[in-house]
Amino acid sequence: MIILAATPIGNLGDVSRRLVEVLENAEVIVAEDTRTTQKLMQALQISNRPRLIALHDHNEKQKAAELATLAIETDVVVVSDAGMPAISDPGYGLVAEAVAQGVTVTAIPGPSAVLMALSISGLPTDRFTFEGFLPRKPGERRSTLRALAAESRTMVFFESPARLASSLADMGAAFGADRRIAVCRELTKFYEEVRRGTSAELVEWATAGVKGEIVVVVEGAPHREASAEDALAQVQSLVASGVRLKEACAEVAAATGLSSRDLYQAALAARS
Image 1 (tube, rainbow, N blue to C red):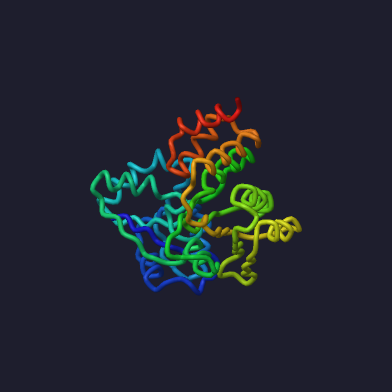
Image 2: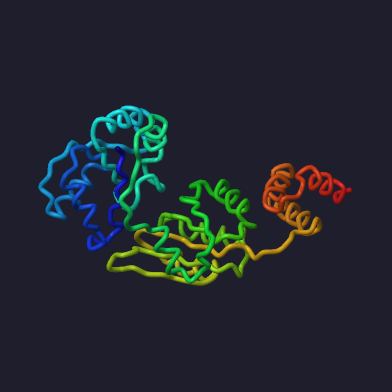
């Protein structure tokens, strides 16, 4: 059996009794960073000395089949450095392989930065989408955000402190100046902080320097039917910002449900 075990995202007081019991009795623990897991077990005064196996982005493809096969013989506990494995952390590849091999997969629920940030953001929680980390390269990040401009669900992102200010500025450009945003920092830790406002307000704060683990929660786009005229205006705006016409039409078509070919023809006609 594969057991995905959620670990604290900061505060050790969030450790569940089930997690302690599983770690105390585990024969095999698969960890994102074995040193971090050893420190956690020491902090919890767990004397168990299981077999520790590292599983990270660079070796998961190679290790998944082997670990899934091992889980047929014995329980394999999977932990990440913080939070639930497989959520922006190693684990998905192993779970997929285990399912393919018919191995049972279960989880010990626990702390989640995504759900905590969403719940305290003050933004709608009935429907949301988790987008993980935005691309590091500015051009790719802007393209990703433009493609999400019409997303009506609340969006949750992870971001590094070093890129926070530039990402917030790009969100303002893609989503509009009035879109509400909550930046949640150091969740469950001593310096936990939530900053709420528009992108412009938050960029000014973030530019001064921000530290710690960051979760950004963004209000979804208002519900409205896009007219052909509005869609064409979006295409023209994207083209004016440097996006190729074909790509701009594809982005707007994906967001509005309109035909990319019709938008392309309309854009060409508008030029003549």
